[in-house]
Length: 259
Length: 259
Image (tube, rainbow over all chains, first blue to last red; front, side):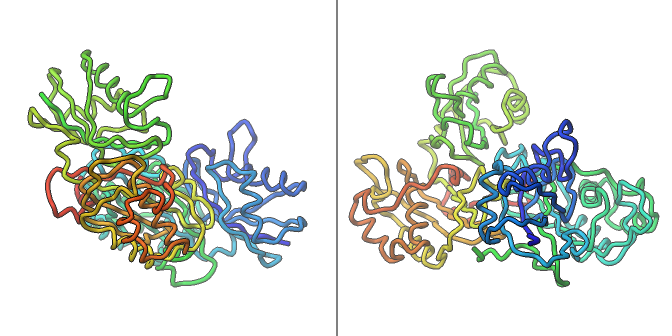
């Protein structure tokens, strides 16, 4: 049976998602595979929807693997969580189609970047926000964000070379939340290497007045990484959801009334 | 000069706010006093607005102390934060009137209780939420909460004996937030011992169908701790704000556009 799991983690103490040699530190993939192997007594190798960087968090990463272990899918989360540390949790499990590939079949992903704009870094938020106690021009950030929506060549926002850097940005919004938190939320057909963090860093530079709000079209068309802003720190970034159907993706947050 | 500081902390690794003998563990008060003493070279003893329990967090605790150290109030947060651990942060500092007493002069406090209702405990929220993956009847909780608003004898919700247990509940709301988070936010003229956690625990029992939504009037009038529900775990509770003016207190969250 092929299983599809939705997992959440705090990236702070992980060396990223992707399994590495043990001397590189613990990874999300390696920790999940070890837990599944201990539970089932069988070697488990899993696929993830996205290879989040070191320090990046997830509320809805998707992973998949095959298993012959006789356990009802609905019982997998609790069974696996008994073998997992508190910074990595399985939220849901279901049987997937035999050929399900969580990365290739994803039609879009939603990431969010959170900034704590209070005068000091609030401790309860410190692990998943960037602290930036400077005035940010949110309307300017929103205007710049709007120029990135649609189908574009995003190589200016990528930390790697790409033959095809065309992606569709379905949604990119900048919003002030209660309690002096600033949200940058983006849903795209795919994200190039560091793309979410480079967009967040560039939009923050717009917010700080370091670059004009109307400069995004030139950044895109220049197709040059040097034209965009810095790579925002990983700690503020969270993979919120991986989409396997749609559009629309506008209602990205899980239904708050769901249990 | 008497200073008034607004401080934030994650309560997880503190043995509560109030200074204790060192063998009882680190406290918020003790850690702040030690930092201020190191900074100034003078012994500092401070007063807090509220003695939060072990494990309870703060976004806006208020403390006050006298100092002869020649430093502009605006420079105190950064100077003190250099001597503080990451789970305790000074947000703002200002000069207070000579007789300022952060506890006696507080006219109201706002606490919030956060519940993570997702199927698993999301790691990035785990330190400041209670995880409860059971269906909660939010309209019933809201109806029960409404019966607690106003001036009442709250001794049924207190873990201690009181001569005068009369307090005014200005605001008490139950709301579903995005991402399957449930909020219980309360603003009262004062909180008896464990009152915020006992109200949260009682409202969650209403939400679970363990007690009727219309039973709160009888709980109040019975003036008996045994009539109310359990004490909700400390980890979900946060002291949001201490009010020194008002009412109204309805706009309890700091202005999200402020920097």
